Each structure stands twice: as structure tokens, then as C-alpha cells.
Image: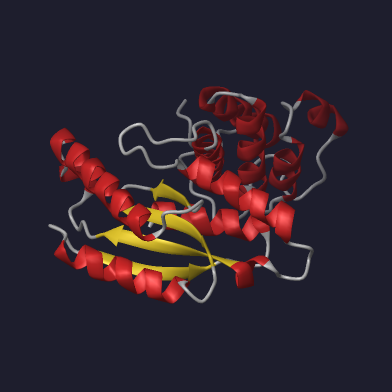
Amino acid sequence: MGLFATKPRSGATDGPGAGRELPEGVRRRLPARFEAVGEALASGSTAVVPCEIAGRALAQDGASLDEALQALRETSVAVTGRDPSFADVQALSVAWSEATLAYLHRLSCEDPLTGLSSLAHVRSRLSELYRSFDYGDGTIPHTHALVVVEMADHRPELVRTDHDRFSRSLRLARLGETARTVFPGHETIGRLGTTRVVVLAERDERLGRRTALLRTMLMSADHPTRVWIEGLPATDDSAAVLLDELARG
């Protein structure tokens, strides 16, 4: 039997017991973290959101993706008598992967290829700012900002060679060096994803002039670049989401 149910489901479960409460005997047999998934399957409602929650929780617990998928299958078979739907498997897998990637991002402070601060270190510095200077009154958006430098690269990732990736890392390193000449103080300068460098800088009267100078200096670069000021949100959690979006962009 395959991992996915072959009959598609459109947000509802029509297996045995669908539309009823989860029997206590079945509930006790469910794997850890899957009680909400079992309840959703038993009630006939979509289990996508509970699967996302379970995927993140299992990744944080240190469970492998194989273990997480096996637990989902055991839950689905116990409640509905069949394998989980593709939507449920996808939701759990994506959530597990994102949580694992977020953990890996937090492991290192320096990107080994460019010498720039890693995403984890930039994130840590931001958290320190929010803890140290924000008193619940939205201080940080007025005192600090991100200066983002983007290196244009329109080729799909799949067609790039190892040499392309190494060359791109060297270019990012040079962008970081140029940014450091404009921001020579205590500013954190890091790598965001494969095409961006970020500067965590104070939002003072010099920020606009410095950003304009950086843009001018990069006009002579051997590849097109874009420079802009990205405002920071009011909360630390929102700042983490913003960094992740910039890293994926």
C-alpha cells in the first residue's frame, strides 16, 4: 500500500468513523503529537493545520522525517482505515522541513564561503536589540533598519553549476566588503540566502546618505545590484519572519 490515499479528499474525511468524535481507545493508541490530527480526521474536517503543527513539533523534538511520516500513517490508518492524503503528507513534510531549516540557520555565526555573518547571527543580533531597547512601545522600527543589497541573478537554481555558486559567493563577499567601507562601525553585515547581503544599521540622519553612497559605489560592480532600506517591524517575532522572507527571496 502506498503512502498516500489514492482517492482524493477535498477537505473532508469519509473513512470509517468520519464525522464522529475520536474514540478514547483509538486516542490512546495514537503516536505522540498526533491527537489533534486524529480528532480532525475523525470529525471529517481537514487535517492540514494539525499536520503542520505536528510536523513542526516533531522537528523540534528531533524526530526524523521518516519517523514523522510513519506516525502520520499510523494515525490515519487507526482513525480512517487508510493511508493519509497527499495534502496531509505535504503539510507535515513542509512544516518539518521549515522547522529543521530554521534550526540549522541558528547553528552558525559566520558563513564559511563569504565570511559574512550568517542568517542565524543576524537574527541573534536583532533579538538582542529587541530585548535591550524595545519596551513594548515600538522603539526598534524608529531606531534601527536593514539595508539590503541584492545581486541580480535570474538563472534558475537547477541550471547553475558548482562554479556558478562559488563565483556568486565571491561576489557576495565583495558586496559585503563594500558595505563595510560604508558602514565601518559596529553594524552587523550578513548574508541572506544566495543573492542578498544585509546590514543591520542605526536609523539616524546618516542612514539615507550612507545607503545612497553604497548604491553609487556598487554602480561599478561587474553585476547589477539593487540597494534599499527595509524597515523593521514592531516585534521580534515579526522581524524573524521578515528575515526568513528576505533570505528566501
